[in-house]
Image (cartoon, rainbow, N blue to C red; front, side, top):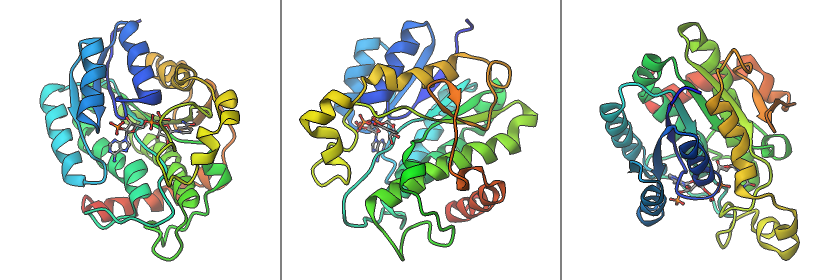
Length: 276
Ligand SMILES: NC(=O)c1ccc[n+]([C@@H]2O[C@H](COP(=O)([O-])OP(=O)(O)OC[C@H]3O[C@@H](n4cnc5c(N)ncnc54)[C@H](OP(=O)(O)O)[C@@H]3O)[C@@H](O)[C@H]2O)c1
């Protein structure tokens, strides 16, 4: 297997940290990106690898991260947009003026991917978005209300953001596949991690009860499809622009297959980010 340069966000904990350990164990160059300085440094020290910090609630932090990554890595084989989460009952607006769930799970990774296009092109690389089956359960997508100004509830915001990640992978793949740069999304499973565990989180009950402890799968299981996609040849070993569950292309909601919605979301995202 060729050694790849793999940039992994959300690598300080949970599925991302497990994926980092597995990919490092397989001999790849793993570049860790986390938010917490302590947690990220701990995983980096354990593996003896480079790490970077970012806070996706601040788009300037994303721009600084992209500058650092592009300066150090002129060629990136895999960008895993894995950082994310679900938040609380009250709608929170970031310093950039966007609803927090939308920005952390979707808009910040959209910007990071855009800013890393040169290294991705240089490697004919691929982008892997950690989405969720929540897009089927909770999304009520309104392209005219991406920041949930009219209607916010945390599960819906999370489902919408995870749907947006699938639409991003589809549209990115459609636009860039011809130049050898591809994208894919996947659902990791229902996984025992720090996800949703914060007090006030909208899915806390589902993740922290004793019963939940029996039903949740370990983080290594959550990382399995990410590692599978990162290590294989996109477009040869698996079809790109798709949504995977347990290493297989899986059924999505109708909205997640809507190519005109994917294009419209792309245009609006560019406009929101001032990169049109
Ligand atoms: N666990 C599940 O059942 C499940 C199911 C479906 C999808 N997912 C998705 O899987 C991905 C990984 O989640 P996980 O289960 O591994 O949860 P986790 O253990 O809570 O890890 C989340 C990661 O995202 C990072 N992160 C959170 N907010 C951030 C921000 N504002 N800026 C930058 N990084 C931020 C965290 O950084 P710090 O730790 O450094 O703060 C951490 O590394 C997420 O996208 C989640 O939506 C999880």
